[in-house]
Image (cartoon, rainbow, N blue to C red; front, side):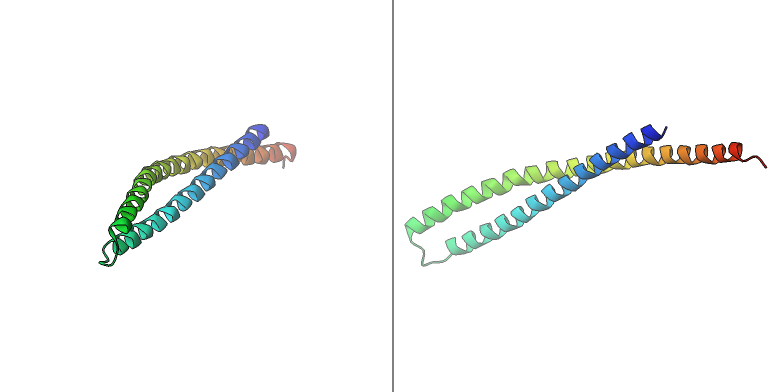
Length: 120
């Protein structure tokens, strides 16, 4: 029984690491997305300025298309990572509940052994 509880503690630790890693990855993606959104805004503002030449306009269009494509691709990655985080958090809760059940069983067994070892 104690071995099962230790094994379950390992499972919970691994699940917690997975959740933490996924949260970190999601935060990084979201930061990159905010930066790309700012870049898109700056490029669009610069493109709208009347003093830009035709060559600059073409260059800005190319840059804008590239940044927007990356933004869209990472929007999908952000959604996938968010879904993975939700799934991982749910799995962590289930594993924590299993661990809690095992710990409760161990506590009851210890009390029973104490009672049997020290009859009044």
